[in-house]
Image (cartoon, rainbow, N blue to C red; front, top):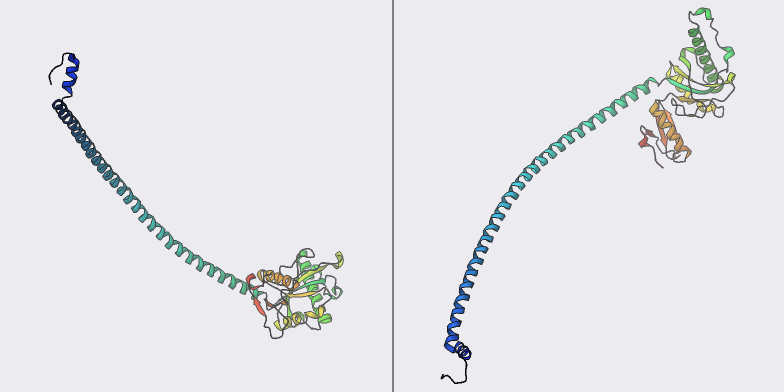
Length: 303
């Protein structure tokens, strides 16, 4: 383009820059520069990505190895724990079996002891409420000179009076004739105050009376079981006299008898009675009902 007379040098430069060939040249250079920068940047990002990937891979591998080691340890501990639990269960099962056998054995021993104790008391009767002065005037007298020990004489005298009182009671009120030879021994028992349950009979004892006529509990051991059973069978004739004849019960049976009598009062049982030292109950008064033998508390009804 021809230069005009009125254009300055700056204007010439500006026009020169914006000539097409110059613009193309500048664009090429700029593109080349930008491409180089971008390539460098891309290369740099690729390296970072590679490093990141490698680091992640190393970290993951390290974590996996650590977790695997921990899991292996935990798994071994669990296996050992399971074994310990299994062994403990086996030992517990054995102990439970041994305990069960021991309990059965102990229960069998208790039953045997109870049976022997009951048998040893089979020939005994316990009489409650017999006044100590009853028929005593007819008792045989023993001189204190007949014994060396005054306490022995007093005990013998008391036993003879007790025996005589009982024999006279049986003849006078029960209609049962006894001889001294039917009785092995008759003596007084120490009893609790009035209103307490007698642990020997399971019945309520009576100690009413003045000091001179105080009622006492006595135990009579028979040599003749038929005589013993005859007296026990006739005990109903003493109804209303405040004199009671009961079997000589074991502690366990006496406790059960007490509970059964309370259930009778509460109308949960029709009747409760003992026979040959064993406790029996009836739920109703039906003649067809067979008495139920009671050996433990769980045999009684609960209400």
